[in-house]
Image (cartoon, rainbow, N blue to C red; front, side):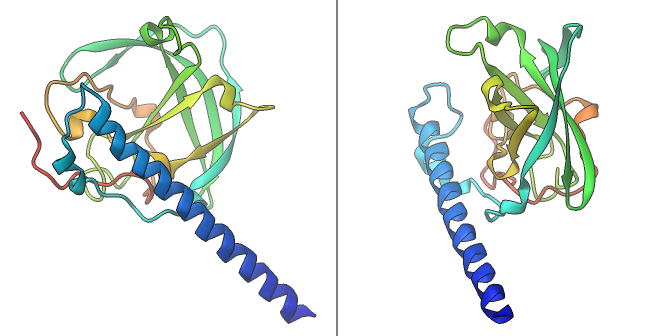
Length: 200
């Protein structure tokens, strides 16, 4: 009976891993297609072969505790081209990753939040120790919504972390992840370094 139990756990885990990999593959397929349909995209269809990703890994899909912040003041988040954008800290999340406690802040773009359809949009930029090695040196982003927060929890999937447009081309206002959002570990998930030539 003990061996049957272990076998069933093994089969269930493998099935979940395969299903999860399929979901991430579908997400990345759509991600690539969006470059082709976005008129402001820095990439053409021929460039897509230079997009690289870590293998899907469900251990980087975590559930975090959320503290929605109040009485925060608007601040200027610098961008890589020298401009600044207005943001406000919306929430602080705490979670375990690779066996260590972590903390990140989630932000709301003031200008974007005033546009119809983007009222619930939240922004999670972060840096980690893969930057300038396995991943883009300027950090990576995750898109979230206020509705993703349920009963003080939120699911964060680093497998969906993506590069800012500045990783592919000059001429974009890409926010620089604040120092407070630096993770002192390697997040081996999501998008890797772009292998094509950066456009100017």
